[in-house]
Image (cartoon, rainbow, N blue to C red):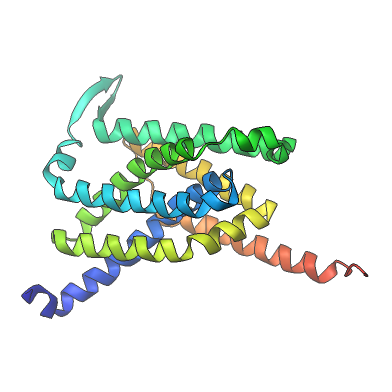
Length: 240
């Protein structure tokens, strides 16, 4: 435990935790949207269960760090692209996000989200399956980022655990806020489409600085918050 007596250790831990929370934002948004399709009494179980599975998968991947690094070795050549298993997983995850988010936007624009038959078609097991599949993709991204910041597996596990606990605490707040405001839902789904494109681009070998993507999303969110405040201020109160 001498490692925890060094100042650099705490700096690395704080940095790792912050990065894991930032990288987990898209995970929370996806889980919130999927969970909102379930009955109210099952939504919390889906959110906590999904994040719990994310924690388990990331710790298992960390303990299999040699295997993870091996996944970056090319296994398939496609024209001028050499793809590893990591690339294939990222591309598949990106395509899944694109399809899922586009269908969700279509349902909301067409007004199908209020249809009871659509809501009933979403089972708890199917929701968890979707969460697990995306957790797997996001876990690879998260673990590879952590590996790039430190070589201490214990620090990685602690940072990821803290980040997941923070996400569990705020998952309900984020979910209620996103599902309460239709414009925020569309913005969140658009964000997931952007993440899907980023995963595909990274899968074919082009690095995309995530800072630009998160900045654009936070900027769009800030503008929408101003719009919401403006609409609330200029909407006359309904008289009883």
